[in-house]
Image (cartoon, rainbow, N blue to C red; front, side, top):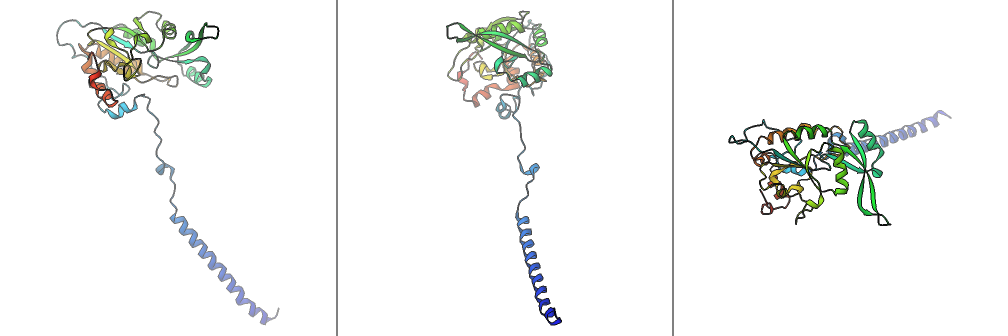
Length: 300
């Protein structure tokens, strides 16, 4: 190539490179604007924090009634102060629900093997038994169900200590064919003075299988019911303790010995348990918020 030709091509080469650089600068400018205009995604700040459901079945009960925390959060006052005269106090009557209060039960064939393994390794006591189902076989014979039961931690100590200062009554909405053999296993010492099954419950316009305490005593000032389902005691809301539900997935549960038993000991010192229970749980207001008017309560 001659010198003249080189002089002709050189400006075009430089111009081409300048054009290319201008295009690249323009491209990066546009890209930078896009990046600056795009919001950043910070998972820690932009994503709402996950809040697991509370253990208490009545989460709205705890949220709606600040004065009435569930048993897991309810402070236990120092005992005493209940007796206003020297007359001896009658023994406290404690009515105990069965399923999800004292035990949790699963049909053995449907119990996940992993759940059984985890519960067993965590130290939960369990047993299996046979019960007669209300269903019938094709030949008309009674169907036999196989059930696996996990005891709530501290169950035996709870019943032993509670029976020292209270009369125990079992009141379950379960059928007798299921509940009777189960209770025989957890109460071999016959600490329950009475056992009441589903036929002893009543139906109301609001709920079925309601446990009416008036059949136990005309005067309920010394009667308490512990149940994970508050609607069970909607007829006597001032006598109820709404406890935390128990399942096999809660091997570290401490409700029986650390929460319920101390509360019952304090109640045993009260001439009338209802004022103390009202101060702790405000169940009448809770029922009203759930559409059950005060006019429907009986035996308060």
